[in-house]
Image (cartoon, rainbow, N blue to C red; front, top):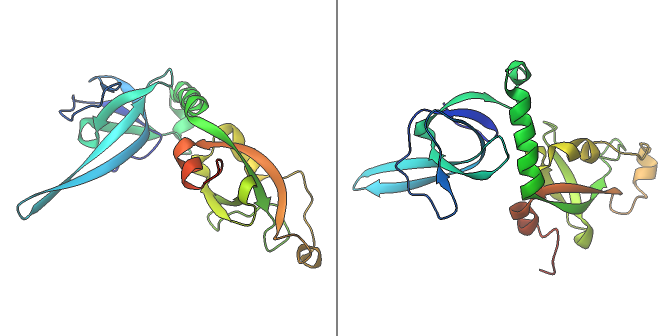
Length: 198
């Protein structure tokens, strides 16, 4: 089974993977929340192998634990509809929020009117929003809602502005609607140049 971001996992054995300074190996018998992962591939002659390293946080929202996907069993994902019936769901949901509070930074963005005149543009699957950075309002960027702080998703996907007609929309400046401040990961803010001079 593929381990996903925001899976609650049980560590069933200790990893033999090397751990960078400042991180600790996840402890066997403990539960953690997966906050990120990456897969590395390496070759042995004609054979290619891959390892997926998992970065985990504990119930205090501390992101300092590491293991690999072969050392864990998935309990459930916080995004699953049935997850809220798990006895420890609320504790892990709070841990996720604590982690986001520490790791995410604010970014000021413009929302955009969609083709119907609604002041927010969402992807077809409604899992991403089209925005523009405040510092470069003519550049449009899709932000996955899974990269937005839980407390800011509603702010990003709703609006205090009323819908407009198609004729009114044609007069809008590049379809921009209102500005909102949302918290996103530092790496995403840097990649999409939401701040700074670069």
